[in-house]
Image (cartoon, rainbow, N blue to C red; front, side, top):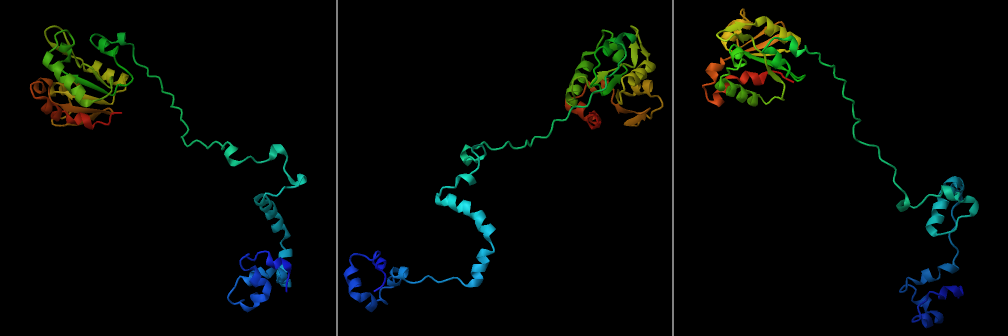
Length: 268
């Protein structure tokens, strides 16, 4: 009749029918009968070739065994367990390693070469007063023939307003622009001082000059064509602009338009 254990999985509602031999009559109608009788049948034996392949990979099965035992909850022998200090802690109890910083390494700013300017008192007045306010940011000298008078205490308010407006229009950092006279005022007339002007350009390393007015050009660059908008003298670029007494009577937007070449200079 088969193994007694084959009846362990039989439902109680069908056990009488099963014990009376109806499993053989209705075997086609009860496909689960064969599964119930499976324990009494001999399991299929693997072919010799398959057994040889299994035996040829003992190392692979040996590597998988700890993982399978861990999943099954089996106890690992003491001789195979790692020392307590080397056992791996759960992932939630481990501090993740620090990630390398993606911030670029801060580069040290190159050491700035100290600027050596002449002693302000080495210049005559009114240049000495201007020299005391010159900073290392200096990029360009502005000059005009009437400056000697404006620096003598008889300044023209309209000219002062004009230059304040143009400096704001340039939008350069404080100290990038400095006035440097090419004339002096003796109380009644102008005295040309082109030598002091060019000495200042050389001493402060200025590479740009804004020359306002044809009279100013005739003082500091008499050989430069009056029709030129820009000339180069000894490595210095000089822009030719309108006379301040002409500019000061114009609306601010027209003043800026006539001085737009100042914005095209490669300063800084």
